[in-house]
Image 1 (cartoon, rainbow, N blue to C red):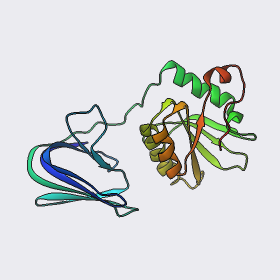
Image 2: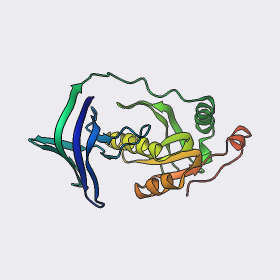
Image 3: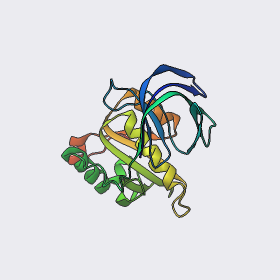
Length: 219
């Protein structure tokens, strides 16, 4: 991971346009190629970002980050670099889920037909280079489906599933792979983002699953 603290302005050029005026900011460049711009006034959400696949071109006075599929650009105009360092973090062991979330995964894997009649389990914690997918399964037509499970469904969970799908769909043995975002509660913004990316949403009833009753079907 590369960390750069710079006095900079940022312009996003694409389907939407956005501008951040000149100010000191933290720029993160991760090993997966993603670039995100952070301020000092929020816990984790970046001010702007570019997800992979993308390429970074560094020039005097600024950087241009271009998305490999859409051509959208993040243009960073740099007035002064205050800090620039790189660090090797190694393979992350992944998030350890809380008891309810882990139990949801276990219950849904055991009763995968909750997602639809004729669905079958391939395996839980399916490994990828960026962490395990909660559940990999097949739908009633034999198609591969990756399921990400959260207690509370936020935009970050949809982003996480999107990254998994990008990797899984490179594997010819299981592609094409669809996505399902499953949670006890899914925020409206997360539903909108999921729909935009062709990801299905399922609201899970923890008590009903424990009682081996059906929850909401997929669509």
